[in-house]
Image 1: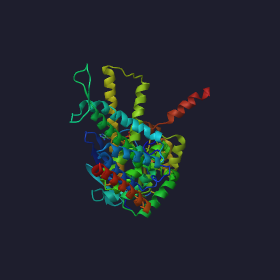
Image 2: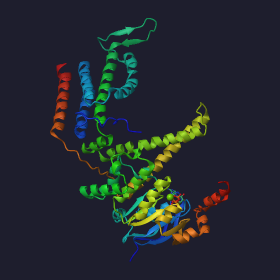
Image 3: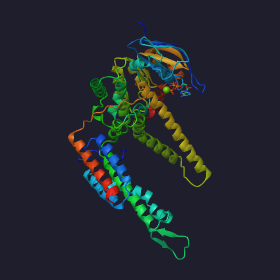
Length: 259
Length: 250
Ligand SMILES: Nc1ncnc2c1ncn2[C@@H]1O[C@H](COP(=O)(O)OP(=O)(O)OP(=O)(O)O)[C@@H](O)[C@H]1O
Ligand SMILES: [Mg+2]
């Protein structure tokens, strides 16, 4: 199994050859800017810009669609909840239903949900070129240069490494249960079995942590992960960042001052 | 000449009350290759984890290459004595094989150029040079075992310890590892239940039993004493006996 997010790191594009430190720093700020926008028109402009970035990265859109679907299932219910629950303000358009007395549908709620949804989709569209155009461990390593605390970087690197071991262990145990003809059903036995399953998984992970830590100590680990790092920023890296920063600035200007 | 490893009257009890070592005394000379054998639970792993200060003796003394095992000496001792643990997944915790092999040298504050050179050497020796950029989870089990050895080789320790280096390997990979172990020049301690491997790599056998050193003898003496082998859960001759019995059917 491969980590999925960086499946297309080997492609070549102007996003791929952007120094990961610059790329992550710039795009994270851009993503924050998107999340702070107020006006739908500014958000939509950003959305198209994110589409463009995604296109430039050459990552197939079908790959990103899965992630967008996840966002949709998460935010989709907002379209139902927000119109029903948003606090009515002067000037809101509200629909009433004749035979359901307490139900009010506020159109402003739909637009609120729409804003949240487009923002979320845009941010996902930025994240994919941000982390999908380098090997994931290189992306994480560059976080260290961006002054993310070492302990955090270590945690990310270890999760990246051990999620696969964990999954393999999980699958193996599942198989062991299948071999012994375990069939889940709605009874106390099933519950107990799942309980044992999780317990064993937890104990195993804990033991592994202990042993990994001993292996690290044995090789001179003293609490800080030393990360060899050999990126060199070129003129084009600065240029790309300046370009995105200017766009960020203009959109914020448009959103806050012009509208 | 003073021994490179000196262990004197070592006692250790786990926090849960399990007494694992009850007075181990052992000297190992520089350049020796020792096979450490004994039944499951006899204390082999516990003993080797003392040698680089993963555990501290509750009673007794350890001296590695002239340095007594103390908090101040621990970094120096860990540079001199490398342990390859049984499960390679626990030994390979970095995103790539290269990073893993570089991990030890980086911690020892070597220069970058020196590190790169040592990593390259270790990878070449383990025949992993082409896999340097792979993630450990993309390697086969045999490759991971070799990578685990490379992570210690890059440190050029004076003593290398292997905990079950050939467990779970197929015969081909087993032979590869045995060959590597046999040709290392440093002092070696090899924990194994595998008699052919021991025969190939260790002229001297140390037997542990219930937390003490039971016997020290040459590999020939060891292999010729079937009673002894059986006593320490290592008798494999029964497999051959079976074959003999069934020869008539073949
Ligand atoms: N973390 C631990 N906590 C408590 N007891 C332990 C721990 N690790 C080992 N023991 C116990 O200490 C004793 C010695 O164990 P040790 O792992 O050193 O044996 P071993 O000779 O390496 O066995 P094996 O051949 O199975 O690897 C055993 O009785 C074991 O149950
Ligand atoms: Mg053991």
